[in-house]
Length: 70
Image (cartoon, rainbow, N blue to C red; front, side):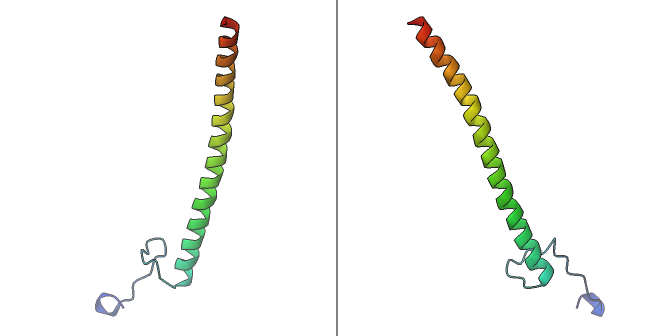
């Protein structure tokens, strides 16, 4: 209970207790971790694909240009 016997709400979005076993807190932590992991995987795949294709194009053009010079 809170001040003067008034019970305060437990906001799962603001809960910082990593071991809080309240249902909403557990689900929130799991969903947040899943979303973070999935987002990192998608971002890494997109970045790799983009960087690889751009690097390949630039490297090929530079290599082809240097072969014509020789």
